[in-house]
Image (cartoon, rainbow, N blue to C red; front, side):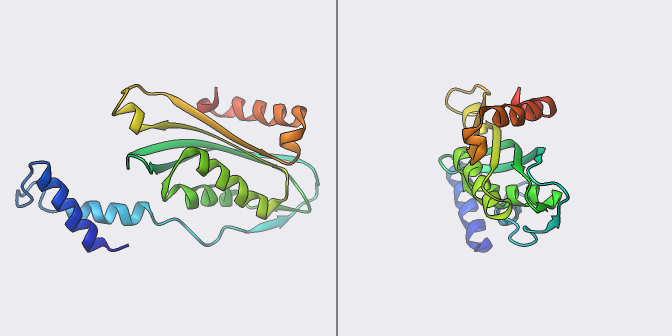
Length: 185
């Protein structure tokens, strides 16, 4: 990311909105905003695939309560998304912290919630096998702050493998998610 160019653009935006960037109270704002964008859009690309040997195969594993922030690609406004992920174990299981790292990897870019959930599911598929479920419940500030100006929770899901085909397994996953995560009720 070209932070100096972002700072110049923010300064132009502030001046276009009627603010003087030589005002001491906002003089450093362009540089601060540029640092924020660089930090916010820097997704972790490493330490994503640590796995451990598993004693059980075909066990349902659910990780929930992961909250990420992303930016709506249509309005450049933030949205939060509470995520739950599940899979059926194989001979190896994914390390617990990897779920949050994978979620942040895809959240830290201009995004749509539907794509975010699908990308996380795709990534998990490559690491834990074909039976993966991901649910995301997000509040989008582009709806809360502008336009309709009403908060709403959008829920999206990606069910792959047996989660798509087996209603009982899908129901068990959703039951575990609903019992542990307020955002999915």
